[in-house]
Each structure stands twice: as structure tokens, then as C-alpha cells.
Image (cartoon, rainbow, N blue to C red):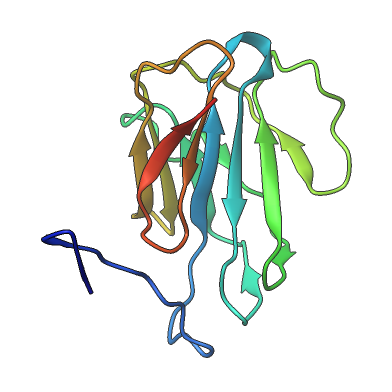
Length: 140
């Protein structure tokens, strides 16, 4: 589709993906409210066995995700080590905190699945992915 002379790319998720993988949906690096949200945008459930996430390229297995199933459309919130939010269903606590300028990388069996560098965000903003275009934008 061409809009105003620019090409617009829209991502459509297959009903039956050959190899569905989790995506980083949203990040917040603000102080003691930092978190990462992973999402399963596919119609198939995804087994999380083998997934890890890190903010340090030298430590790809820094935080091993629990071996559980993330159902179609479900998300998992990973709160930072200093985040004051009390973990509830659909949440886990990571052993690290996020800050602007870091690159967060999601791995599956040691291979990069998704990666995003956190820009210099305005205080209290979040960095969210548009699941239609797969581009990130700052949400205030």
C-alpha cells in the first residue's frame, strides 16, 4: 500500500504459522517501574521452553523464561528487579533493570528471535510496538 508517496508495510499474522515465536510488545525503562511485555500474536499456543531475555549482549541466557505455554493472544509481563509492582498472574520478575540506551534481546535456543534498543524516553513514557507494522513508537 502506498500512502502519501511512502510505502506502508503492514504485518499480518498467519492463522497457522509454521514456526510461531514470541515478540517484544512493550518496554518501560522508567526508574522502579521498568518492565518488558512479551506477546504471542498467533492463533497457535507457544511453548516458552528454550526462551531467554537479556539486556546484556554478552549474557544471552541472563534470564531464562519459565517453561510454560503462552496461549494465543496472551502476554507475559517481566518486571524489573527494582520494580515495586507485586507480581501476579501473567507476570514474573527479572534479575535485572532496564535503562535508556540498552538493547533488549529475546532468544530461543540461543538464536535471536527479537531485539529492540530502548531510546532516550521521556520520563514515564513506554516504548510500544505497533503489531500491524512491527515498528516501535514512544507512548506518553
